[in-house]
Length: 452
Ligand SMILES: *Cc1c(COP(=O)(O)O)cnc(C)c1O
View 1: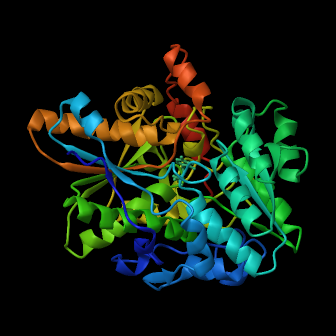
View 2: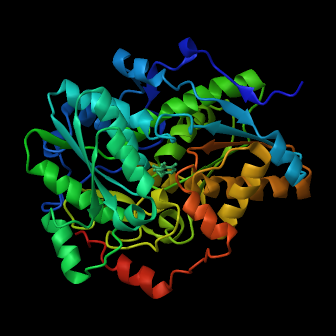
């Protein structure tokens, strides 16, 4: 009998999140105040986040206990399965063994509820009444609306205009969970009105939607803001993925040689990779860790490592990260979750330390891998993890050439059931790979603030 799934029982689910910072050779540079350029203290973030999350953002502890109420919600879909991709391996004719950790089993269909649930929980504990947020493809908005419903919070979502127009069913899903959705840029905020003043049919961007959600939260004492990626506490919450994967790889009797994931803001990939990086730094395994980003929004491979804003209007603290410039507006590619100008500061730091590799792949190669995966494994992947799959296919074919039996582990961070318009574009030959001109990169990079 060939085994397809490696499953854990509910009581084997990890009960703490892992913080990689104490295990790194140096800590990441601190966020800076946008005006003074001095490191910010926790109180600077208090208008936006509850204190429990701010503490997690800066914690030096290696492990953080997951609250019982959060574990109870996680158990609705966790532990998630680890699959061996026998069908894909056979189709590729590779001696490599490919494993994927499938996060599409969650209520939102992606890894996002892993952090939405604790974020809603800590906000509710702090007496917050309403959460605001941005969403790209709609995965994060869906996850936060779901989590808000469970903990009795209102949830207001600014959705990137291009995705709002392309993916109406995500909006319906957010509304089904009780959330409210606005097309971003909107007339509801000063940040939105400023952008619309320049271009009435603006397609929006994650940076703009963040500005709008932050602006509304900052003005109302009963409202806080929630971010679906990028920040340390978000990456922390996602480490349940990698902690489970380690137990499941042990069940499979495997030691990973290559870990591959897609990176938008970096959270699903860090969630899988950081616990494995801990094992690597402790000398217990030595996997290559490789991020895959879209060729049209390549912050790690084409960006600069510099202090920049997290949003377009420049309202957030300055964070040192790989960035294409906070006013870079990526082409409206189908992997909406990967259209962010920056990379998580913590993942950027790990990249600077040389503990992580990155490649950029054009979207048609990614969809080719996604379709091959669907036809061999039976799951239609979200457009974002097709990038990870394209990376796996490249690695598996290299193994075919070299004869190496590598163990490849990837995060299949979501399903694509609400992204079928993107598959339609690919299957009907309408998908194009638009190269970003060097001038466009240069003009966006010119907007990165120059610090003393
Ligand atoms: C949001 C999202 C991403 C991108 O965010 P990361 O923080 O890089 O994980 C990738 N895949 C899916 C399915 C998403 O919903």
